Length: 474
Image (tube, rainbow, N blue to C red):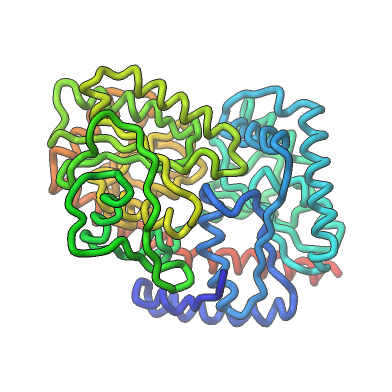
């Protein structure tokens, strides 16, 4: 991961914002000196946290700050525990993962990781530890003299039952954090000192292979090459610009499960792209789309359910099981419906290539869906909005902060209402003017609120606050 200048944002934001960013970057660089800013997460590939860090850290380095990224390691049992905590924070009960045995697995794994970090993290370094997988590192790093920010990307508006149990599990590890960052005010648990809490929504890197501009002919070539749609490849190749600025090309195909041929280029595509996680409700999307098909679907629409290769995301042991459930639901459809639903596993060997495929697929889609049952923030929604696509999504988590219903997209008040979901799809598919209006407003919404530059400014202010407080206390 190299360094990039945030000056490339200048064409997209106001001159005042750029000047503020220059001043904040210079002040932060002077404040930190030779200290290191560390980010610690559980994986480098798959999921929103990894994408956020790939999109932000090069700009921190480009500002002259020594920024580094560490990924923790652990056995499968550890990731089963942390997946259970993740689910509990979304309101899904699983008592086994919050047992004494689970705590011992959790603590032992993070003790082992802390031992590896002892020789690297120095006193007064800044550490941003991401999500439940890393919370157990906070006491160790704080004792070493680091200034620790714990960043939670997930949460739930109603802190009862499983959610409260998950916070009780995590609370002992968070007591020594200098700041705790949440995506929404509603996610801040009651036990957290509001003086240490910060609300900071995530953002997208508009220059990444997933979000960079892409001509229709290139999107077509990529979708054809990967096997998602069927058409003559056209005059353009499957080319894109890699995160480091070098040229890239999509060479790998996707693994696609379908009945019959791929949809043609002019077939309206409804797409949901997400991890194979039960909370993303791919089965519900499939069944709701089946209701769209009866009695009719505007333009003979097809559905693409896409996600990563299930063997490629190390910190999600449930992916293969969820994908198996989606396949089983697909097989239950009548043959004429199954013909119009395509299950796609995207290659993950080359992360930039994967991102370019997602970019092409989102841009080709007539409607992008995120019918999550629960959602921390929903970066796939932000990405689709930036591309000017009309989005139909559940009014859960951070999605309801991003989309103003019928202004920037369509919100589903009840994600379990499959008829309501089908009606929303039918409305957008049947009205091209509405779809265009929603997409244009959505792009402006992201430009004004959810660019990487916004996150850089917000993080810099958190660092300034905790460093000033630590200096005053010493």
